[in-house]
View 1: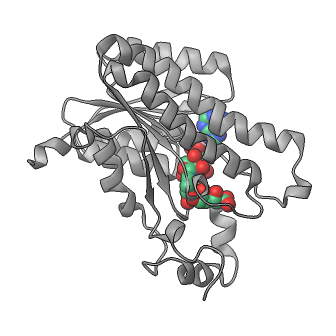
View 2: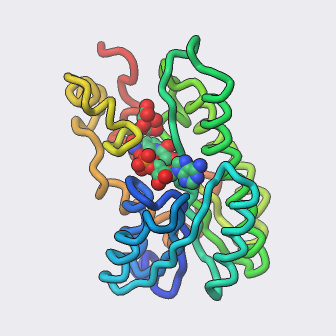
View 3: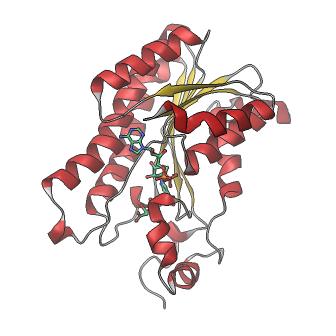
Length: 260
Ligand SMILES: NC(=O)c1ccc[n+]([C@@H]2O[C@H](COP(=O)([O-])OP(=O)(O)OC[C@H]3O[C@@H](n4cnc5c(N)ncnc54)[C@H](O)[C@@H]3O)[C@@H](O)[C@H]2O)c1
Ligand SMILES: O=C(O)[C@H](O)[C@@H](O)[C@H](O)[C@H](O)CO
């Protein structure tokens, strides 16, 4: 197979939650592979430095506001995105959040915040953009899952439920939209150092504890996610849909809880 199958020149990718963290990792990788970007954040001005970075690579970056917990914000963003460009080829449903708490302390509001953001938000953004993709008969939707899509961890009940839901949603949407030329896959990262889990990384001994449980014996680096996002966004994955690709150094298949 030619490496051209990974080329994203002429494609446009929309990435939610691109003001920091993994959203920017995914955007950077797609832009380097040739894609122009639409990037979203709750505050458009938070996207300015990243848009300049993308433009410096020679690609376009259109910033749009989006709060994935707000139905009207999703509808407005989808309308604006579709109106602004000829076509949207790739959607990366990345915006997400976590509130890490023992299950006995989880409140009604905690549950709603996590599930509304990670699961309901991803579904309705996908639906809005898929309406456009269905008309064109082409699309690549990449839902960001997690190692918690396939593993259970204390303190991550609602978060794990949202990520398990994303894995299931991926399979269902792949079946819904496959006949329209749209693939839907889930990229599930392991434990990367971002704002979301900064508190864990700052705990004494956490990195050593984590490393001990990862078969590849190191935490993930942003670069580790680049190949997987470009693969799932490009024609290299044309016959792959409904799948969850774990990029986690093997932790989901390794000694997750016990060391023998
Ligand atoms: N860091 C990891 O190890 C890891 C592992 C697996 C999955 N994830 C997932 O990857 C995604 C990116 O997380 P990250 O690690 O970069 O953390 P992060 O907190 O740095 O980024 C989360 C992004 O989502 C945005 N966001 C949150 N709530 C939103 C809302 N209501 N509307 C719009 N945007 C909203 C934030 O503004 C931010 O841009 C999340 O969905 C997260 O759950 C992260
Ligand atoms: O806040 C947290 O406990 C962490 O951010 C987790 O959610 C992980 O980062 C990740 O999702 C595992 O794959």
